[in-house]
Image (cartoon, rainbow, N blue to C red; front, side, top):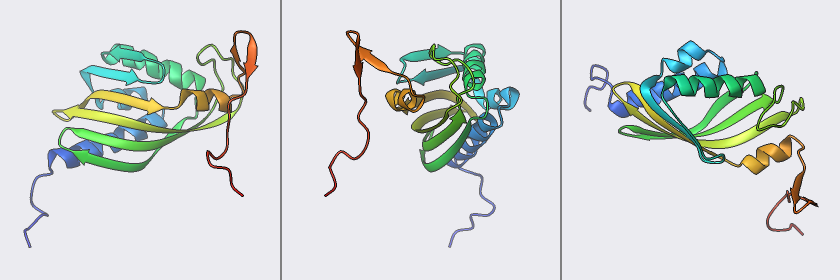
Length: 164
């Protein structure tokens, strides 16, 4: 068997460690520590809202707004796969809605959000994060009403296939 104890860590191993550090820093609401995981030219994209921000200063403002709306947010990595510069994480974010978010005033409701984060690293720093989650699910958990042409909409929940 080859000696793996004395070999340098692969890029994928380093990037996995950085992904864990990034989400731990976010969960600790530590802006300095979170930003330390990011390259100056970071690109952060939230697919559900279409929001794309570039650079550490813009990402810091995004985190400030996120942490103000959900000040106790914690992010748990459930599954992770890495290849070269890419790390893909299946995460669960849990938080209480205590500040305005997307124009929705605080509800005090605990939200559990499943999400996928696609991360890209260069030279030991994150250069890209793309987050995928179901925004309707988050809004539904907050108890917000949906309307279409002034009529209330019921967002279906439950199994797709009825149980008998």
